[in-house]
Image (tube, rainbow, N blue to C red):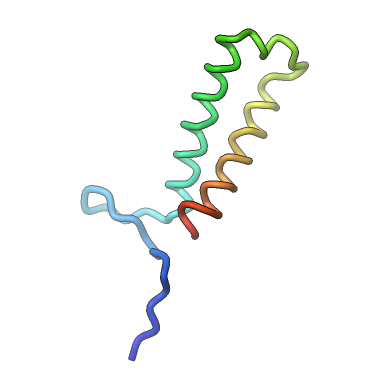
Length: 73
C-alpha cells in the first residue's frame, strides 16, 4: 500500500507541473506588489531608507508564510 502525503508534491496548471514553492513565490510577489502599492498610496514608503530592500524582505516574508500555511511544500 502506498503512503500518500496530505500535501501535493506538484501543482498542475494547464497540463504543466510546477513545484509548490514556485506557486508560493508567485503569490508572495503578488502580495508584495499589492502591499507596496498600498504603502505608496498612503505615502508611507517615503519614511523607508532603502525601499528595494524592504520590498525584497516583504516578498520573502510573504513567500515563507504562504509556503508554510497555505501551500505546504
